[in-house]
Image 1 (cartoon, rainbow, N blue to C red):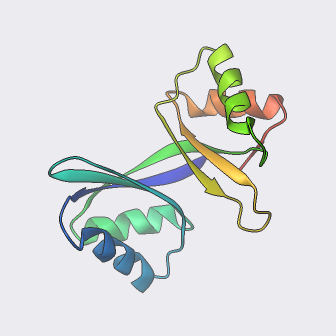
Image 2 (tube, rainbow, N blue to C red):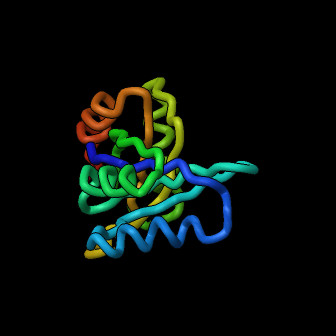
Image 3 (cartoon, rainbow, N blue to C red):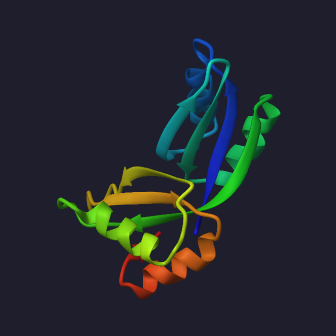
Length: 134
């Protein structure tokens, strides 16, 4: 499992750039990023190379943050690869709270980032099925 940083931020012009600027100033590299918004606030979820450090820095900057365990699973770069993973997870009766995609920068292969109620259990199950997790 890997740690995902979630940042709760006002949905206002310049907020996302402020967050990326703070990370840049501290030499923290983003690996994956997804934003979800509502009328007033949004959740910015990201994988970074130094999650604990990033959480502290963003907290000091006044942002509400949280670290969660997620599973990053390499999947094939072909039609149906994500579906095959999700069919397996569904067959195991596991709920996926949310999912987003990234890429292995070295290999160029897709990575599915999953948040589930029991990340450790899901990780062991997908590894047993032959998937590579980060």
